[in-house]
Image 1 (cartoon, protein in one colour):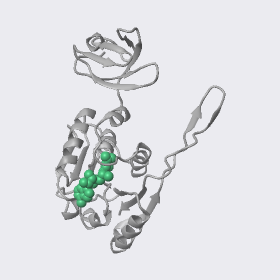
Image 2 (spheres, helix red, strand yellow):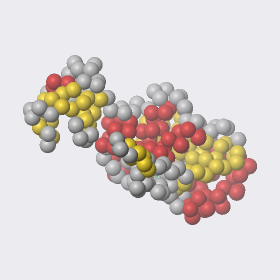
Image 3 (cartoon, helix red, strand yellow):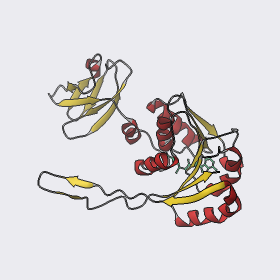
Image 4 (tube, protein in one colour):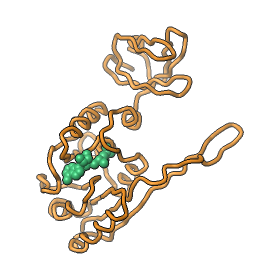
Amino acid sequence: MIREGDKVLLIDRRGKRYLVTVSEREFHTDLGILKLGELIGKEYGSRITSHRNEEFRVLKPDINDIIAKMKRGPQIVHPKDAGIILAYAGISPGDTVIEAGVGSGALTIFLANAVGPNGRVISYERREDFARIAQKNIELAGFSDRVTIKLKDIYEGIDEEYANHIVLDLPQPENVLPHAVEVLRPGGYFVAYTPCTNQVHRFFQAFQEYREHFYKPRVVEVLVREHEVKKECMRPKTTMLAHTGYITFIRKL
Ligand code: SAM
């Protein structure tokens, strides 16, 4: 049942989505004004009607809705890449994950969702403005209880004594290797997301020194080909997101 203060997702007849907080206020759209107080006591999946008699469906927002609507600082990790990070590293409920940099907090939200209420995500970020944006986004997703943002350059060191996994989206992940060797639990993954091939190359040059501590590396790139689904024709979309980044996985022995 929907309560005052809940975040809800409204979807209009065109498929446009709105993320709103339920309260006794009006919400203005180009399809008319909604009295959000009417949502209190309704079930998810129900409808609300604007003063212009336009219907909106009401859903409970998931993390993808939150990420789509939240404020952005730097470029976020795309869900296709977040998905493979969670799957290949086997990030699970109860895990402690060290992350850097937090950026807009999109990957942090995926990680926090995966580790669950008994897990922890400790996210290093060296820019205060991005840390502030991410903190708000993490609150919006409802994960402040399990995420700690540290205003610190992770290249200088990791304060924590252990981590199940280390997940990085920053320019020089090789600078974190000496710290990772100290804190990463055996069996845990070191994951580095980097957009450019030369970053991957530089990482593996530095990795040679640490090779004995890790199981064989894996580097992947995720390509998702989406299809257009129409009544008369289903076919691949003309354009696709061709490149985001390379994801390197190394597992601690
Ligand atoms: N993964 C984030 C997301 O999905 O929203 C986006 C991360 S953004 C591309 C990269 C971030 O790393 C920036 O916010 C930058 O300030 C931060 N950063 C770069 N080097 C860092 C370092 N040595 N320690 C901590 N943060 C760092």
